[in-house]
Image (cartoon, rainbow, N blue to C red; front, side, top):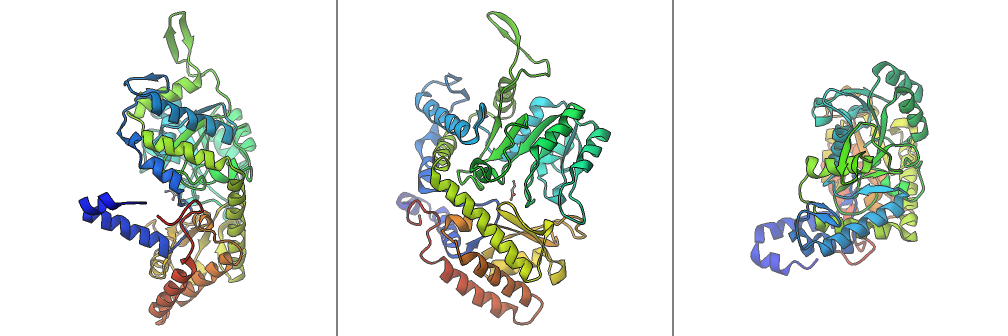
Length: 440
Ligand code: DSN
């Protein structure tokens, strides 16, 4: 991106951004939730739409001058509906957490019971963690994966739901490498009269490409972020496969009398004015651009490659005696339990950082270490695949990681990290951050 003006005006921020460009360009990005947005997406993010206030929704705003931001929001909504095959979408949530908060606050009262996947078993903070609004405003019960298999057992989920009688069940994860059986979750939800929400923030791009189970026919609500496998700008959104009359008894006064609100109206009102004010119109425009890209056939090819790279890496890791939780991956990530390698997640993250490889330490199911130390790392392929790392790259990357982990407890470690860093830099050379233009 051209940053001539910024460079002249603000050296400190310019240097920070320039450093980040160098870091992203010269190192290997394996954080499962990160990706490289296209130049077109970033141009929309950096556009004058950041200047506009537009509380409300297209055609019904609290501010004048919204004719062009209306176009952008309508385009983003229409493309999202086409991409995910849904009847309703709200593209205004600033993040995945805001999207989840929007649904939870719309359908629950304080103290209501919810069920979600435990954070330490791969869930997300907003699925009921005690340190998050979801665990503080609501009575959260968490289900986990099985110790032997690393899989979610639907019988256990059902058993828990019958005991807990939740008002809302959340399915979805940040560190689970298997798919979700949304149909089975819906059967459980129906048995206890609960709403079902799928949080597909991680695999959204794979789901949009038809590579994983589709939550839309089975879940009352589907939330996502737009910047992970979907490769858009940082943000969130809420979808419903089909709108329905809200069973919460929320009504609306109209000229024709009082009527029950549709659930879409309840969700819209919860996002704005419930929990947010002015939408980020530059980001909504960029979401529209990203959805347009994801509707192209090339995106499906990309998503298939993301999954293929992950499968190749998991197999290679297993061949080198690494323990992948759940024994493999069906999506874009894997969780590696490093206990048999005598290395904590924290140490692995730091050493790999020294070697130019970015991953995050991650709790593994039944972890005996704290979230600040952890026994594992999470590895994901969305970003490396965007850079065009296909074919032999996946295996070579695993070999580089193994060189570092294997040397972790030896006095050669500094030298190994330095050597791997050179190899990583060489590997990254000539590969732009994304396929849509030269490195910014
Ligand atoms: N922080 C994200 C992740 O890394 O999975 C989830 O919000």
